[in-house]
Amino acid sequence: MTNDHPSPTAASSANPAYCALTATFTRLYRLGHLGAIVGWDQAAMMPPKGNAARGAALAELQVLMHQTLTDPRLSGLLQSAATEALQDTERAGLREMRRDWELANLLPERLVQAQSLAGTRCEHAWRSQRKANDWKGFWENFEPVVTLAREEAELLSQARGVSPYDALMDKYEPGAQSAEIERIFGAVKTWLPGLVQQVRAKQATEAVPGAVGPFPVAQQRALGVEVMGLLGFDFEGGRLDISTHPFCGGVAEDVRITTRYSEDDFVRSLMGIIHETGHARYEQNLPRDGVHLPVGRARSMGIHESQSLSFEMQLGRSQAFVQWLAPLLQKHLGAQPAFAADNLARLLTRVQPGLIRVDADELTYPAHIILRFEIERALINGAIEPADLPALWDEKMQAYLGLDTRGNFRDGCLQDIHWPSGSFGYFPSYTLGAMYAAQYFASMRTQHADLDARIACGDVSPVMDWLNRNIWSQASLWPTDALVQRATGEALNPAHFRTHLEQRYLGG
Image 1 (cartoon, rainbow, N blue to C red):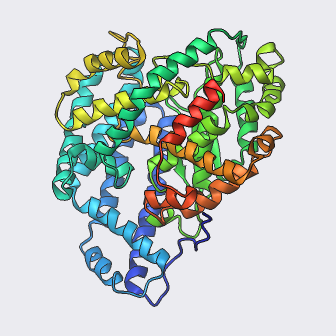
Image 2 (image 1 turned 90 degrees about the vertical axis):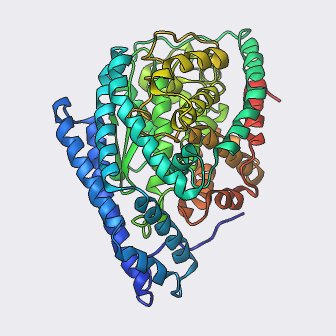
Image 3 (image 1 turned 90 degrees about the horizontal axis):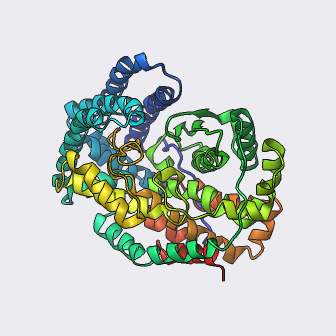
């Protein structure tokens, strides 16, 4: 199950069509580089009054990239390259170029520009509307975002013969189908509520001293930066900042991650930083000789989320990792009973249904994702309208997590950045990523019987080496199923996720 394979490289001069395509896609990457950094600035640094001009500039950039991808000469180059004597890596490169080209040519320039402008407008207004619990104000900007997303979905679905929602989900999870996602999530819904109930009953008998704040932001940042360094983050190729919604952005050569702080809760920022560091290390370790081409980028958002969740959940909340994390908390935040290693491990694995997805514990998190998947699929497929969103959200939060969100739009359907920005079809990637991550660590443990002992001593090299060899270095050389099969010996197997949760939270 090792993956010794050449990195994606530039084409040889014996293949002129492929060389010409490489030049075009390198240009697109450089334009995308500018867009990524400008997008980071928009979220982390830009003053509010800059949004209208920034939105127009980003829309202009999106149009320019779309025009480059829809240049009529690319069709002939793609056909000619298919007949050239390409290496296997170049064949994979051609496959990924064609995928990008086909997507662009299905969408009119007018729609690309309109979506960029509407998403920028809605997302920027959402930042203040969420704080104000202003559903009505949000809805006015959100309706155009949904209308344009449905138009895109319809164009893609007609061309590909899939449902509108599947057409959008394919942008994030190539080849995925909502019927299969529904089957996987449906199985989770049969066992997850019972497991949550068992674990909460077990934890109710445990005495777990809570951490006592306040925890000054400067101290939390220093802690986060040290943990990032121990996890291998390259600070000469990236940085940490603050934003309304934590994210990993930028480009492989210049990765920008963000978090948000609360002086009452150090766990939120620390686990957010560990999560985003997983994304960042994936980007920082993509093959440098191919990162400018589609084949050199991350495989899918499910695979990307598997990296962040390998760091945050599989590693960061494990008993082994906590053994060397606890002294760091005492160093930066001060000594207190809550930071004893055994107690800290219990603190980081407390199960309590909550309103906010990004703050959810590992066990209840899938319920947040299933809820969003079901709502956005109905929205894009036309079964519900934007105005129906709050009531459906309230209904499903009560059914899946036993929580009342009526009238609480801020902590309900306004809490995520994805829908305001028009990113429909992304949410399934989170729980798919958790399942992949559990499968990775099951594979690691078959190769390293002493994995947890080494982690407890601060040696995370077996984890990083495995991820680098099997995931990071492979970029998009393989379709997702093939990538996971080569890494673990089997395609996605959700049983590993259930086993992981049962073992961590119930023992045995």
